Length: 285
Image 1 (tube, helix red, strand yellow):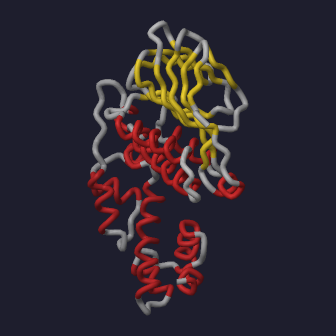
Image 2 (cartoon, one colour):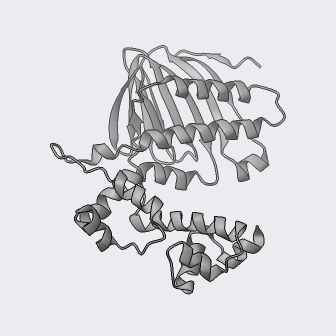
Image 3 (cartoon, one colour):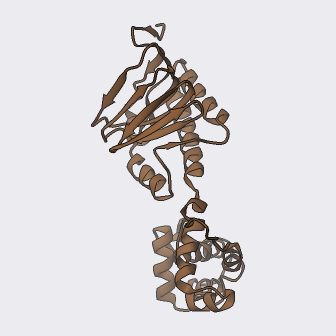
């Protein structure tokens, strides 16, 4: 079937996609993708749509209203919104051309919350639009193909799209107050990476790097997206997993090698990060 739709408001090529039951229950899955050119200014409004929308403006201009805020978009801008909330978009007199994809997945609520938590905005302007256009083009091509594993290929492309969105969302420098400079904490992170075996406390880090501990806590999370304690736990557990798999050290010895002397505390930290106790992890692998 020719996906070209010629109407009074838009000319569009779109594929309305029906994923398999397996894809709906387990994967990021596509609902619709396409490209349109507005023929005259008009508004499209929706609410309560169980979908996430990503769009790029290829030419022209328009507006997106989302969650009570109105955003002006022009060629080179992108939007990423949760369509369960009320939204609308409208082409201006400078009629726009868009590419878009509607998609969903069992984990999308958490993914979008993380996107927002990292500083992701409903509308943004990437430095290079090409990777975004390429991904949308690939999604359209795959959705229109007869590939018998196309749901898996669509999942791959949507994951790539979300990786781009997560990278785009992280702008810690935008959180700085006007006229102030944030001290880079890369040295602190490097210290945690190499000295995880040592007894590390927030007060100790504050003294070592001559940084107020409250400032250190706040800025580390801004710059690296996680707290100092969580990052240190991840580093220690990563090394613990290597020792559990490839050494004959006891669980208690592994904990000490990773900077945690108390066996019960090591077990709690390991299980919190990995989801299983250290002994169970060793048996599994």
